[in-house]
Length: 325
Length: 252
Ligand SMILES: Nc1ncnc2c1ncn2[C@@H]1O[C@H](COP(=O)(O)OP(=O)(O)OP(=O)(O)O)[C@@H](O)[C@H]1O
Ligand SMILES: [Mg+2]
Image (tube, rainbow over all chains, first blue to last red; front, side, top):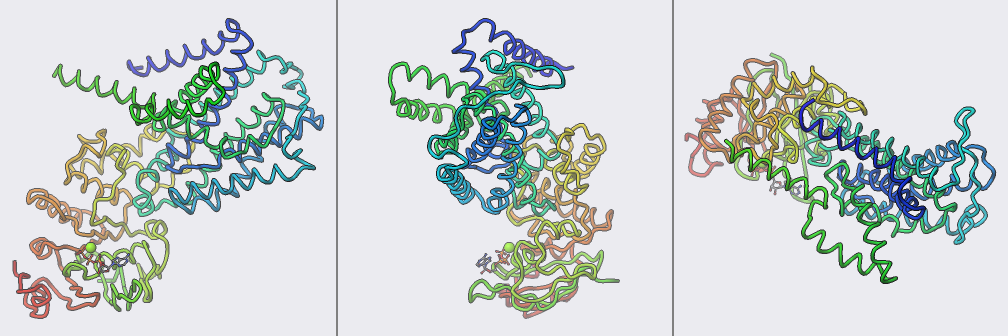
């Protein structure tokens, strides 16, 4: 193992220990806050597979987040026996929705793609808002009953914030491992090539649409993981989960943290919640202040906070190496 | 000799403007063929149709006996036609190695490996290194292409094309914008590749010195129509061609 790989392994280990220890040293409020950050981190990571790695800006990602949330909630208010299975079905529903939306959207580029996904997102929002008999209209689906987490004979009570924290942490880690693997695979390199130059990619024999669709569906799947968890976390699914402002959240988090570094969206999610919670202590109109903070951040950290810091560190290291030569 | 490419009455209209007007020509296997013509003659448009960037308005394109007219670019690439572009067209925010690997992955249909890291595929990396070595780019393997000189960027594009192992390579002005040294290097490379591989080269050029030094067969395009065809000697002597090039600069 070389130096940088060892450093990375150490960092990963430290993060794992931190995740494991935190719920025993902080209060319930913080446990829930970190749980929410991890859920939104999954959402932002899923979004960034499409944005940072494939070069497609989706403005309707809340649709998949919401579809999964509603399906999971629907099952759980109807006495569905397994939480994990409910989450799985919700996630599959999100992936299915992503196949349909993606099929039409990946034909388009840039702003047209963004607008089409925004349109689809609004359609899904209207659907859950109007289809009262199933979705509960503007009230949403409330009163989720959480079955115990049945894995074989083992049954775990998930209703306490601490145990739910650990369930979310497991999903968070699995999502990171799977997505990390995907972006570093042959498939991931083809996605990057499409992002960099889709014409050149097409002329080397790559079917752009097929790869974009695959990326879109994987992305929708993980947005679904986040949405299902969020419904369980909130004990409800509400139309606000699919509102276009909910689609803007992973966009903001990703831009905040950095789209071209894998962990950028996670850092962005942490910053986003930190900013929100600090400001809401002083004022209710926190969105205005978020805007006021975002503008200088985007100006001074054009590649996101993590992205810019890493570029800077790399440059410094290169300068030092040149100095030594 | 047998034809690798047969083009029949190929036409492209942009609105009322006819960029390519009923061009019929043949490229023989392993015969280095050039398509020349003044600015706006329709050379790039012609290549765009051959490579599937857009379909022709009318006409047929037959590659190795198979009708490929109107197929999308990724299919034509898979069938065996590679191309470079007049304006360098590579994957910019990626290393030289990644540029070549991407094309190799596409060629070997390994793009559906979702979980295996591409740099751990030793066979693939060795293949990419071989291609980079043949282009003299091996020492730049891990350099982002944004840091390369103009000439090296153009070589990377050739590398991407080679990584598809096409049987026909279309080069759209391969020496455009190059320094004299870079041009020399490119000509030598084309000569070498034409000799060492089974690939047939079909190129467009502005630089007459390049055209006459590399071509075995030349087609001349003028205002979308085929004006002349022949060996370099025949084209050099052709008065019509000299007129098209204003003042007979063809003999340069
Ligand atoms: N997409 C397009 N839409 C409209 N007109 C076009 C298009 N592409 C090319 N043309 C026109 O068709 C004509 C032929 O252009 P083309 O690029 O094929 O010429 P060329 O022979 O490659 O020229 P050059 O030597 O400058 O590269 C030009 O008049 C050009 O303006
Ligand atoms: Mg041209």
